[in-house]
Image (cartoon, rainbow, N blue to C red; front, side):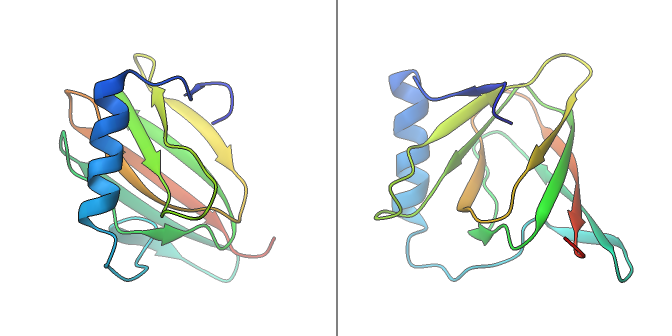
Length: 127
């Protein structure tokens, strides 16, 4: 997502992400997305749909991933306090985009846009 990430966020987007983080700080680590569509020994394929203002579980990227973002206009991410990671957002181009995400991060995904967000998450289990 490096090519589309915005770290110099509008104040209202930064505030929305930080508010989400603070409101959900006591929740346990959950799933990377909402529903498993397919799984075998090599991959797990998930889907996730978020309405404006809605966020995912706090999740850890245990493996490398491909995110196939099909719908939406802006998605954000925020990590728990103390991780040293700043909130970020990504504007999605019309028609969607596919990006790779390396393993290692711990974050919530938050729909900071005005449209419904939908993505397919491909988790590469054997890497």
